[in-house]
Length: 337
Ligand code: NAD
Image (cartoon, rainbow, N blue to C red; front, side, top):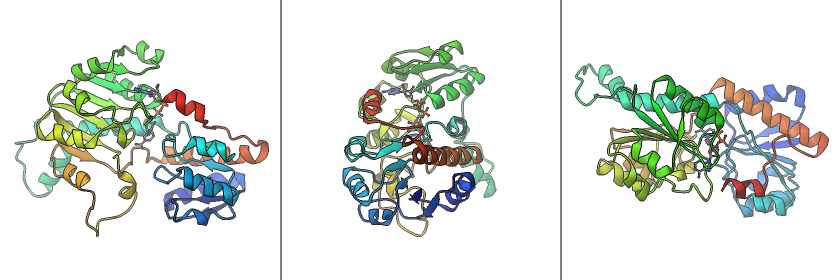
């Protein structure tokens, strides 16, 4: 099939071309993001292969349908950026990569927790400048602390498992609790109780209408004063303005982010020669106890290989049977909300 790969980087090309050796599809790699302005570049493609910050709102989906696109083969697990109702209306199938390497994201989450706690990001710079003073680098033992995991799907379960390895007490909140978590000693509680008891709160739920700004001013008010908050799920699960207030008044002791509400205009690009226009993001960067990575939690060899092979598998199945392997439907979205 003819496939237009939007938001593609050299690493996407490397892994997708390798996975496509057997698939035999014609891949066109486009560096640009998919938007109303660029949608015409999909002309001639039956399949569009977008990434997390591509615009798949109703207008773009309608235009894609008009161009003859029949499949959106997402290179992501999350599908909050796709208007599923519009896709269904226009007869476009949506497929995703439900699991590529949950380990990649779980391990990155724990890297953020450890780095923030022991201030490795600050120590790294200090030592390079010949400053070996320890003031400001005081951490705490994770051993015996309470960690709250919000969302115990594939990633949350792995984070819980790693944290139990540190002898943390792990609490969890998920409308659909997992027996595997209970079996490892995780205790499910209501979200307010999790927030009140946890020294570290880590978010692993999808972004849905129900989880949009799940961590707002009220939720922050329930947290243990000085607790750590980590978000590697989707930016808008956190209300950034409220979090900045929480950092300023000390409610939040430290913040680790791999995702940001308005990341579409920032992440995945080298903007080092430009001024950051987003004042909220710029404010976050001023806090010494905030650590931000640019949506890189998924970025391992294993994950990119799995994303590429599952994506090509979705396209090949669609070409041969009319059904992709991992389809996403509007009613599924409603259920998850
Ligand atoms: P998953 O579908 O396996 O698990 C999500 C869990 O969240 C499910 O158990 C679900 O019941 C739960 N959930 C749903 N609504 C909830 C709510 N209101 N409160 C608490 N829990 C709720 O997904 P996953 O593979 O574990 O991924 C989790 C999220 O991580 C994805 O949705 C995606 O947004 C994000 N993600 C980020 C990266 C990255 O690079 N930073 C990579 C992959 C996934």
